[in-house]
Each structure stands twice: as C-alpha cells, then as structure tokens.
Image 1 (cartoon, rainbow, N blue to C red):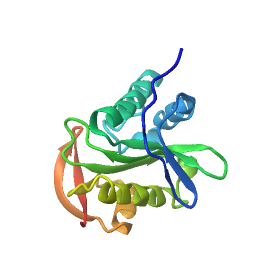
Image 2: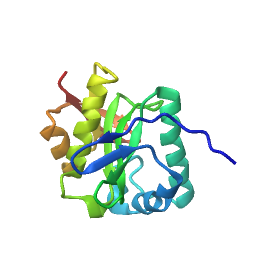
Image 3: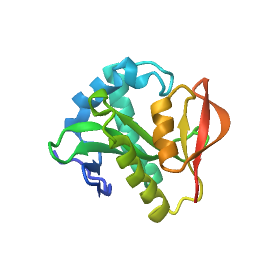
Image 4: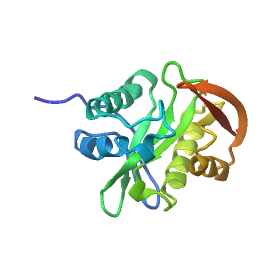
Length: 173
C-alpha cells in the first residue's frame, strides 16, 4: 500500500536537517514527549502517553496540509539521530503565529534549538513572508527565553495559553 506524500520543504543548517516527520520517528518522538522535563513548559505541562504522542505527530503532519507550513523533525546531520521538532505553527486556538522548538534532553545545551529556530525564523520571513512572528513561552522556561532573545525577540504581552500565563516574544520584522 502506498502512502500519500506531502511536499514538506527540507532545511539544512551546519549541523541539522529539518524535514517532515516520518513513521520511523515515532519511538523517539514518543519518548521525548513522555519525558516530564521536556513537557513541563508545553501545553498542559504534563507528559504525553504514546497514543497522545501519536495524535500530536498526526496533528503536526496535518498542519502542513491545512496551513502550508508547520513543525519539522530535527535530525542531527552527522548521525541521522532524531533530536526533536522545530518550526512554524498556528493551530486553531493559538494566540499568534509561532516559531516553536522542542528538543530531547540529550540535545539540550548544544545550540541546536537556536540553530534550528534561526532557520525556521528565516523561512517564516523569506518564504512565508509572515508579518508578525512570535514564540509563545512560559515565564519559567528560561532556556526557551534565551533562544528567542538571542534571535532578537522581545517580550510582549502575557496571554492565557493552555490554562497558564505565557509571554508572546515578538521577533522584529
């Protein structure tokens, strides 16, 4: 049985390949999203069960179909290892168009989030030509705030997001 294919662009950086999620990514994705350290600042702040991780992967893939942009799987170019997800998103109910980034703990502290987010930001500006780009970040998520700030984002208003206050970090045009 053949699977439909999506025309998801690929982005490369010095160390990363940003590509569409694939079925082979599921085990690593489910493990990442089951980790309470990864999920404490995301969504409802709790780890995802395998079925919920599957549904989230399907939503991420469907976002490309419905919006024409989305989150990419992050792959380490040197090893082919799945590291996380980075990209542009604006699902129904989000307060703004966002550059989002979530990496597995083994990828933390290596500059991968900044490298991938910079590529996604460039894509949002140059390809999507989006006029207003944010990252939606919980105030306690200092690592994500550092990434957004290093790319020029400035804290804006606080919004209620998944039942908790979050700050819209706005990227300059």
